[in-house]
Length: 529
Image (tube, rainbow, N blue to C red; front, top):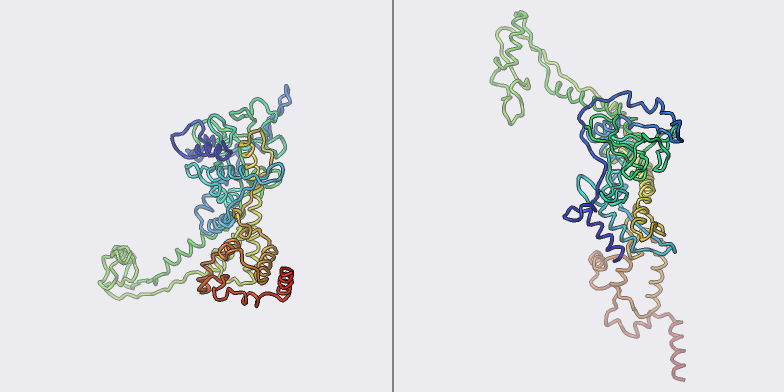
């Protein structure tokens, strides 16, 4: 059985069906629902206060426990999911990073292309992600969500999912909620506990006996029921961080720097909406020198209930108007005796400058320029061009980061697929379009090589030699559709085909260089001799 056929059998376990349940992905990480919002403040900073002393009877140590930043979940919900002005640029950044797709290249120990392993890894990658409760998603689904999550949450944790019979295997990948985790580090060092580290007997271990570096739903993490915590080793989790500070194992969310500006902007927009509602219609003040206070209050109450309304006002309870019965819009009231009416025209405060300032600060930490989203009317080419270059650099940098993080995943999978304990070759992962079999269609094909090819073809045609390569074949090799070009330039026939009336020796002699004729003459003389 070939490597591809063997892997295809394994990949079938990623799709729901009636197959062997023991071979299906069996994630250990969970997504439990919060049952309470209470949190022990002392537990949040417990790792800062110190750690237990090493056991006097052994060399084992008690690791430090580092809680997740308390703002991970709230930042993501309040400033990404519920706020379009930050969600839009981060979503655009996701699409820009993963837009070309990914490519896997494998070379064996001799440096030759190992296409069997490439096809096997491609097949696994196209079915390896657990997403939205479904098995068998392409790796692109996971990669396309990581740039925004890394910036919005600061830390991303991905489980390497095994099976119930082999938890150390890697049959799938699944993203987990980092706010439900606690990390364990070596004493006085921001280094995660390694699987073989000497730890004391109280330190948690994974089902396979490895020292845990991560604990999901630790007893210090409230609100997730009474189930047992779940322990992972460093080899079980792929961790991605953003802007991690010195001495920290957790990354930093961009929302930590701009949450106050987002809150201020939201409040300004609410105030503006309220002002529009309040000042959309004139403010009318009714007064009469004949009213007592009680009469004024009685009139106001009657006005509110509509008891003294005239027939000239709008039907406020008309569904077509969208108004309410007690609306004051356009109402005219008639009252007995002399009444003075004072009309005050309201104005909406000018908040444009303050709003723009908030937007500028928010976009200062976004990976996408604001010209792509909104508020671009005051921008020109001299501003946009440098910003566009910065955006491109941010995309390239993010691609390189993801390549560096996920390349070891494919090397690990290649080791798992190899007949021995380790694959004796090199695996490369790049985020770029798949390589075409035709070198002329590859983006990486050098321009100088293409120019040399075109010159060689031109020289071949001008030499007068007979055409051995059909025009359609040349067009396909050169990477363009001949029929499409014929329609575009209104060619009635094949531009490289010689008409029958022109396909004569005399016509060929006209385009044949003199030296070629001389050579042909010399050859004829030799034949005659």
